[in-house]
Image (cartoon, rainbow, N blue to C red; front, side):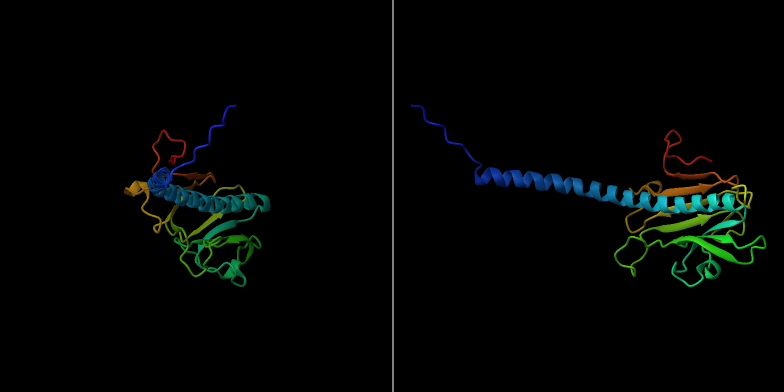
Length: 205
């Protein structure tokens, strides 16, 4: 009669070696995973600003009235936000407002978002920073007309970064900072200013 061979398990030493190897692998991969998550958050935030600019342009065409995309530090729950906000080229909150009539003396709020949206602590700094630029006199307001173009002859750029996560790739860091570019004709592009010209993510001029 044949005896069934007994099954052999792992020894304590083998288990400890296995655990040590897994810990080393996780330790080596953690920095890369952290950078990936930070870049993903930045890309998600960029999409929010991009959608806001698109909304402003689409509403201007639909209404055939001036519609503005405004960067601001004014809280988005402020009463009568459309008429009481203060534009800022570094404002992390944004609002889309339409002129109530052709005179443009008053505005109607279409949509607004906080730069802290999705964060756990509302008292903490915003997870992204904005640095916007445009034609002379630009104060953080991009106005679209009924044809979907802007009211200025020059382009606008919104540079989006997260200094708490690290420096941008262009500055020698590992964070893929983003840029939104709006041309006078109303074309809107989200791009990576550090990408090479051959890269589909590169910013066109």
